[in-house]
Image (cartoon, rainbow, N blue to C red):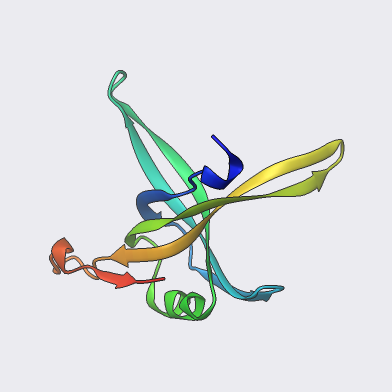
Length: 120
């Protein structure tokens, strides 16, 4: 497989852990939040809790920050990005999900088939 044919796409669901944080960076407006994802382990009957950093860029960042709240269930389609943070003895990789599309159902009384989506 050549580098030009690599695939970098993902879809994941989970809950927004903390209020989304809106800020400006060198690429413009960005909204960042932590997605909490639960993974069932059928062999043991237990589950694992995973936390993922998610970023949304551009005008969608403002819309997301104004619309979505902690504990909301969201489905994210996007890609994985990685940068490195300098540490004492080298560099540490930091992975972030870059969201292209985010969908959720607002409120417990609303049918999940009526989900709103924040498109790319």
